[in-house]
Image 1 (cartoon, rainbow, N blue to C red):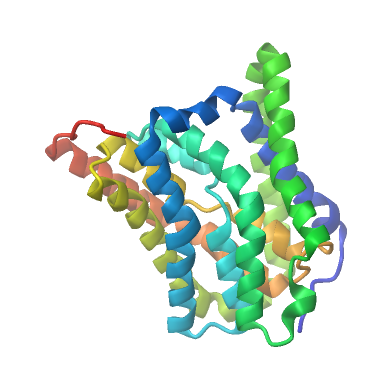
Image 2 (spheres, helix red, strand yellow):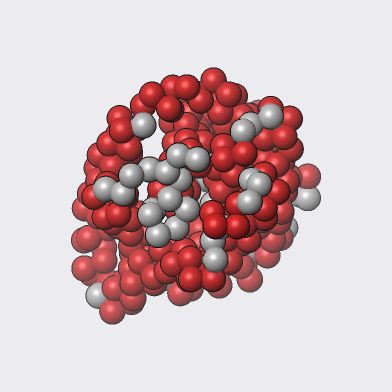
Length: 299
């Protein structure tokens, strides 16, 4: 079993990049955003059911269907359990989604993922990896995941609450800085593992593209099936369809968590390929909305 050598990249840079991203997310949230659940109950509940239950089940079916090797299968399940990425808000805005719903879903998903992600990962390891007990997220590691996901977000929200003007001024620079740091870290990780990444690109790429397309499609059409209006369905599609690959990569590579570079390959491949599927999906739902009147919102 291959384990990535501990380095400054995995022990410091990657967690720092994720922390900066999650802090930037917190700067854009307020406590009232959680109250959005009450204003849009149907849309929120449907999206959360898709995120927590339906997508992991679909991902499990895909990795079994394609016969991915055990550690790659766990990496895909880790990605499926990761909450929506912050990029969802941008795509939702570009293609006419209800960004306020995205903010609410991001806030709630970030809290839920701290509990559901370790559960999905541990169940996946138990199913796919023989003798994988040492690989799982034990109690102390679950606490680390909880801290990794929530503490930077809460700090960002506290800064906004106490220093709103500073939060407004810092929001854009933090977004730019986090994007640059993240790009540098991901490029470094890919270069370091380029040979193994290329070896698995064909098998993982097909699963990653299918999973991305299905996530976006279910995220949009499941709410529409329940008469959620189009703008909220687009927001749901983006939120459910764009997974936080950075979080998945960090958990996979971190020496104190999973410490396994093979598990990081699926989210790394997905993180590159999902931009194409998301753009195709965005243009498709935007063009269809021009010819089909939006139904009255009931969520």
